[in-house]
Image 1: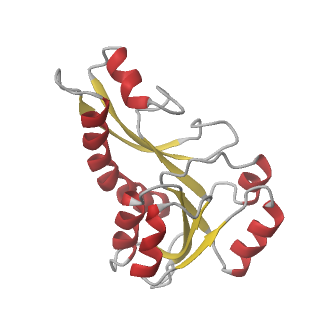
Image 2: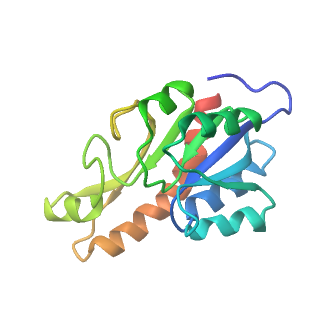
Length: 188
């Protein structure tokens, strides 16, 4: 990944589908002097994503993408000079063509200790399998679901009293710490 030159931050888009708690966290991180990125665009696959409200709150451009029109999406990202993409609760699988255009410049956060529990329902799967630990992973996005090179992970202990909802809450707290650290690692 490119090194930072002076004070120039890497123009970044964050892709979301839901509430945007990781988005809000990444926006706050991007405002810090030591952050290597600036958030210049928020993209969602649905206009129902609650996280889109952060675009108004932080005065960031937002777009709803129809992911069937890859060429149009790529042109828009190029027009906005986007050089890095963070997926944060983005519930759509990107096409191979899209990933190829941004090869090595798309990262994702996943709520499990990959390679365990790719896909959905990670917390209930970890509890049902009587795992002692859960966690989250930031990884590069490839055409294979949740299989790209791991950048960083954070492990937490699963308590006996944990259920999928309580575990999800604990993992999300760790995601908020891990994502900014992983972004810094990508650019250092």
